Image 1 (cartoon, rainbow, N blue to C red):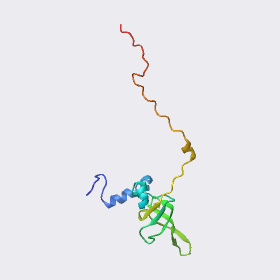
Image 2 (image 1 turned 90 degrees about the horizontal axis):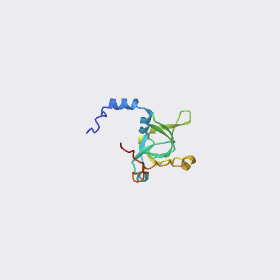
Image 3 (image 1 turned 120 degrees about the vertical axis):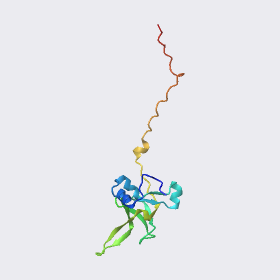
Image 4 (image 1 turned 60 degrees about the vertical axis):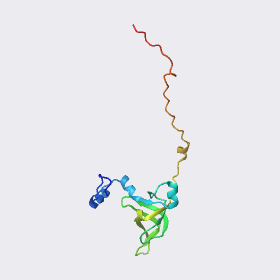
Length: 144
């Protein structure tokens, strides 16, 4: 059953929408499910994979491999994990990009907050409106 009338079910329109989507919308394609411990702590089921996140591959050739995300590509919806490598014919190892949806997030890096932001004074609250009882009495003009 189709719930939203503004979104098409047709595959060609879905593919076209993703191909022409702006980068701030494509960033959401990098979402992945959270581990059970994180899910309880964060109060949500999934999150966007970021550089530095610790993940575990759930499906594909590299199933069961854990590592840290080294690069996120929002245009393709893929991520590079430091332990997922492919060997070239020359013998060097290159990063292998995998779908972000095929991993589970084990740990999210904590954002470092600059000291300036921590020490910044809070904005002063707006002045509360004074009620009529508290306002100074003004002389009303006399009617002629």
